[in-house]
Length: 218
Image 1 (cartoon, helix red, strand yellow):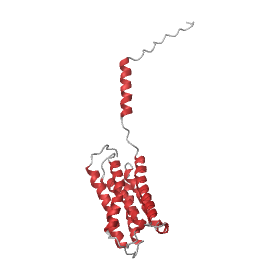
Image 2 (cartoon, rainbow, N blue to C red; image 1 turned 30 degrees about the vertical axis):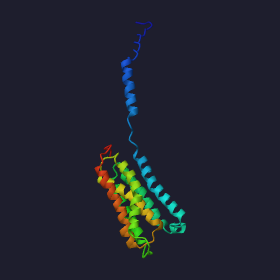
Image 3 (spheres, helix red, strand yellow; image 1 turned 45 degrees about the vertical axis):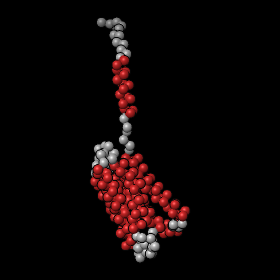
Image 4 (tube, helix red, strand yellow; image 1 turned 90 degrees about the horizontal axis):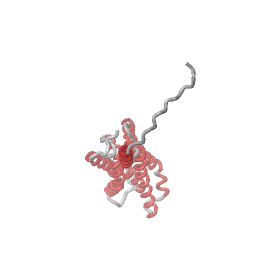
């Protein structure tokens, strides 16, 4: 058979009901109102910025009041650079999802930096201030970055190694400050500087373990 074929008419689409439109609108509003978890990379920037920014601010104040000089800071360039690097690396390792190997490596970097700042001191110079002043001031300076990393840790699944590394990252701020003006001996650094560093790490680990996580993301 031949002849023109006729096409069957397609059914016209039915407009969505008011009920369907209301459900779709409610779903979109609920999605828009749901807070999105910040990227861990944004957390790294925030915590690293706190450590580096606070350290630079303290250095600026000390230069302004004459507590240290540019020449003195230049003589500590190696230890300052190593501690700043350790601070950023440990923040990255602590907040990166997974990353157990990176955290273990960062612990090794912390140990190397700690040994370095002790060995470069040698006999040092005497000071008129009590030795515990360094410990107290370094611990106090470390509290600001400690608060930042504790808040960031609440957005992740609880992990003891993660918390320890994050605490060491925060404590590196005080160790940096100790290189700005203190010229005392290696023994002084080993006892009064490193103890403040360890104390900040302990505080971060203790507090973060007792806070209810906001997320269990790895």
